[in-house]
Image 1: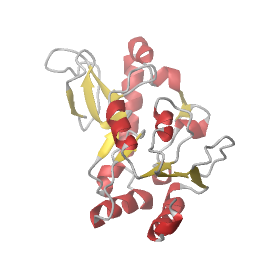
Image 2: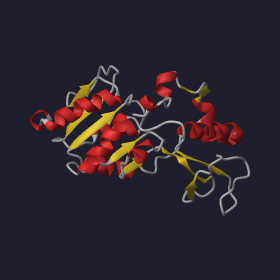
Image 3: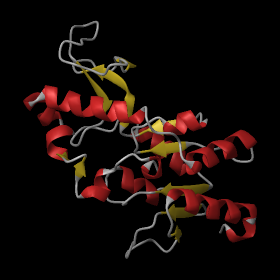
Image 4: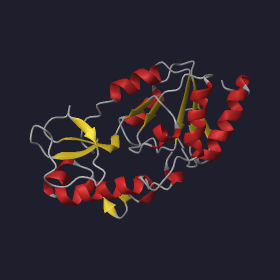
Length: 222
């Protein structure tokens, strides 16, 4: 979803983020082993986030919500704030938020990320080191129950820009009600895609434009 805004995705770059191995920057073990490296990596991503803007797909979703024709909720694996900056108001972040930090010893303590990022010695009020508010590989997904509630009540489910390989998030695609219309917007090839899912084989911006045309002609939705 955010790739066309200039944000790198690890699935599209051989398991790397800006030449960093996932195991070195996105696991609890990596943070214990080398917290400075992990904090520097997320500080770099936080800094990069300030240089990009929502793309046309983000803006189109926000416009649909503003028009009031659809009750739109977003469940995203992305950790950026581009949906919110585009104007969307109901966003469930499955994998956390780059713009926030939390206590490494008290998961309930979440705060805004300092403008300069995080360093060793940045502590929560209880004295624990602050870490990025990111769900790392091997950690529980706190927002999963909310995401399931959203998907299981949907009339139309739109899946945008995903490999459908990262679980538990990938399982959400199969949780829409039987009578819901399900769309996948992604330029990739999916050999074993469920027949129920209509595949719009385009990037997010172009694919969402096609989806809007389908929604305007509602008899083609199902």
